[in-house]
Structure formats: C-alpha cells, structure tokens
Image (cartoon, rainbow, N blue to C red):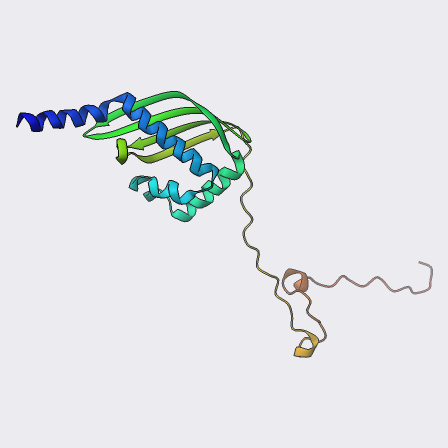
Length: 183
C-alpha cells in the first residue's frame, strides 16, 4: 500500500512540476512552429486535444491556418513572456505566453496545453500579430454561361455571348432622329 501511495504521489508531483511542464511545452511549441513554417496542418491537427478539434471543423482549421500563414509569414524567433501551470482534479494545463517575431511582423502568442509529458496536447493557440491580415482567398467564381452558338440553333445569331446580367441589360435607347429643322 505504501509503495502504491508513493508511486501515485510521484506521478502527481511530476505533473505539478512547473519546470518539467515548461520544458515539455517548449518542445511542443518548437514542433508547432516547425509545422507552421512547413504548412503541415495535419501534424498540428493530429497533435491537438479532442477539445481543440471539437471547437472547429478540419476545413475551418485549414482555412484559418492558411490565412494566418499568409498573413504573418514564417516564424523566426520567440522568447517566453510568461507561464502558468495549473493542476485541477488531476488535469494539468500549461499556458505559455511568447513574444514572437514572424517574417511580416511581431506577435504575442499564448499556447495552452493539457496533460503532461508524452500526453501533452494543444488545447488552444491564440496569436495577436502586427502583421496585416491577408485577404480571404477569393471564392471560386463559376464560369460564365454561354448562349448556344449559331450552329446550335435557336439563338437568333447571338454567337456565344455571355448570358446573365450583361445579356439581360436593356439595350441603350436610340439617339433622337435628326429632323433637319436645325433644332
């Protein structure tokens, strides 16, 4: 019984050790930035916690990460600005705040991890950057529909003109006729 209590206490103390938690988090952050620079969204998504993945769809995550990467550019350097380690009901969360430099500006980043050691997973990533926000990628525009060519019949010689707003616009009014009266 004493051995089991001692082993349990050792596990609890290891999970509560802020230095070990920070070291584990630093490794996770380095891996995150490496994957960010490589646009390896699969690795970030797969290494995140279930709660992280439940907060948005994979498509939303990929779109956000693509846009963020286009905005800030490549991660270059960072330094720790703060940390918080909290264990509550046997669940350890570690929050690391960084001052970072990216290709297109600086940023404040907050990484929140749940778990410890090999079980540490990304719970949240918050970035506040000075880099301008990249424009949202343009939605795919459908190809304009074309009226049938003269050989297809039924088009009164339209010859493949675009249909839609341009074709539906009324023709300009004819200029007034010259009556020859000089007025």
